[in-house]
Length: 541
Image (cartoon, rainbow, N blue to C red; front, top):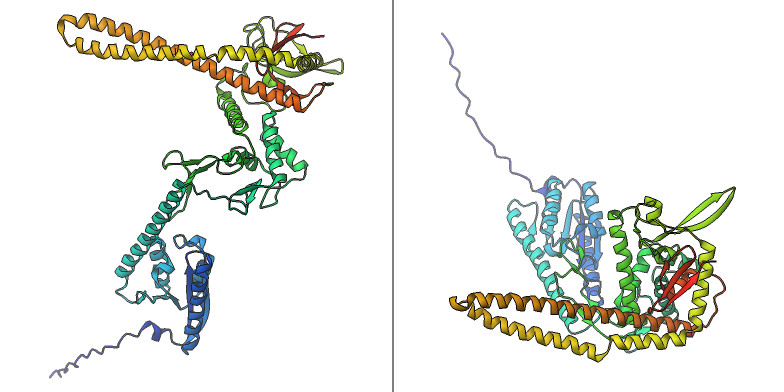
């Protein structure tokens, strides 16, 4: 007979879960605190110190806690963790299990970037490290906090974006009112004056003037840098040697003319804080005559035009044939000025070697590259003979400059004669009259009986208007060119008045200052055209 087994009654015993603190309470909790204030202004200092004092006292009073550090970023952005060194240091210690609990005032103190905030909180949660936000009364290790943290983080980021927009709006309103922020620490030539406006520093202003003068004399940016560093000059603020970028900023800074262009750059958003050049996305504000200038507007504009000219040469260099000049050459003035009288190409400096002797010559680039295909008779010019002829032309120009001035002034007055302006005005009046006639003819064109005649007259009047507009544009361009020539002549004469001299040997700088173009007419002669339009022909001997 088989013996029956009586089943044993099954019992389930619930073992209550321990809190996270109980699980880790083999020793005192290593507690850290994180503090941050948004700006480094004086009024925030008390808040910053108060937070450190508060958490130091709070952690020290709790017998179950052990101080793991107070981490505080002062005057640092909350939207980018990478710019908060103390925050990142705290996270590294968490990964090394040297921190068990983090206390912080609020979610916005921890991070205003939603993505950063949630990523760090989730990483710490996976490590079993709690973050307690006192203002929101949240503990990240509690099971129901994820949704709340997401919402709160979004609020914190939205608050940061709102603050950023308000600050940007305030800055733009300040710009509209003509308030100009000046970075005196890096602005060579100026300091803040007693009246709050920029005050010129004479020694530094001379360096600025020298940089502009060097550039207009034909030097490249690198040549200017070498010259300044040779003189032992250093940049303002950092006291480091000059670099090409520093010189370029000085040459393009409108503040040296006494004006200030505001909102040249803008911050794309408050999270990435990337700065972009304002190419019209936002309005800009030009405050004219804000302070005393160091550089005249005329010289500043000349520098910008020269920069554009040199830059244009670089852009088109790859598109040109080998026989045409590409990049701007600062090494030799004649590379820019010497032109072939036959084909119009520039001349290039070449070295010939014969029987152990070297000779420097200048040859037409087109002739070098293509032989006689494009330029049949351009001569090769000896550099020494060329230099002698140029020196002779410059000395002759300086000797008769008073007569030159009188002749050129008369020619300028003829071109800029008010009667010429009258002809332009008459042409514009005729255009207005034709426009009214065309409006009337358009109405007649809707009537079948007169449509054909009206359309013929409209075409004729339109053609006349086109010719008149071309005439006006040509006259305005002619007057503008003449005015530029007159201004250039004035600058040249002013330089000659300041520097009375007789040139003994050839000088690249003087050549650039005075001469507009040199044309090789033949193997025996050149024509030197000075700025302002005066020409002298010289023999090559």
